[in-house]
Each structure stands twice: as C-alpha cells, then as structure tokens.
Length: 119
Image (tube, rainbow, N blue to C red; front, top):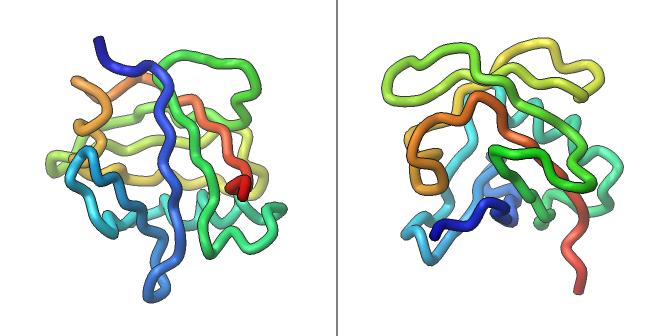
C-alpha cells in the first residue's frame, strides 16, 4: 500500500527550487513554470526557507493543510494546477511527470502544508 501523506524538502539551488528524493531516484528535481512563484509565496514566513523547508502533500485533505492545488488540464506529460489559498498568486503552475512518482494518476486536488525543517 502506498503512502497517502508524503513529504519532500525543497531548497534553492542555482536560483531554482529543487528537491531530492533518494527513494524515488530524484536528485535536484526542479519546479518550473509557475510553481516557483507559488513556493515563494507559500514560504515567505519561513525563516531561511531557501536552505530547505518541509512540504507535506496528499490527494486527500489532512489536518493542518494550508493550500490546495486544483487540476485544470494535462499538457506535455505534465499537469497544470491552479492554487487556492495562496494570497497574490493567481496563475497556474505546471507539475512535471515526476508527479507520477507519488501518484498513479494526476489528482484532481493536491493538499499541501509547508513548514520549517526541525533540527
């Protein structure tokens, strides 16, 4: 059975938001096309987020989720999502096929929570 609640730890590398997931074989996997602006808004109150923050996500609501991405369309093996709950972000963002490392199909909604990495 696959996890329903997942976590990654994005960070800035060479001016881009990226993340690693050794289990999935992803190293410096970049966020592109609208998603970096969403991340910037989501983490603006997290001190030193550029050096890493916690991003929990699920296709089902969970206690403490802060934001929701709603699927709008598929394009070029990736999927476009519109954010809800991110003040000042009105555009969509594209999630690349790495999404399918976590979900069998593109979820209609992705629920998210961000926070600092506890040391």
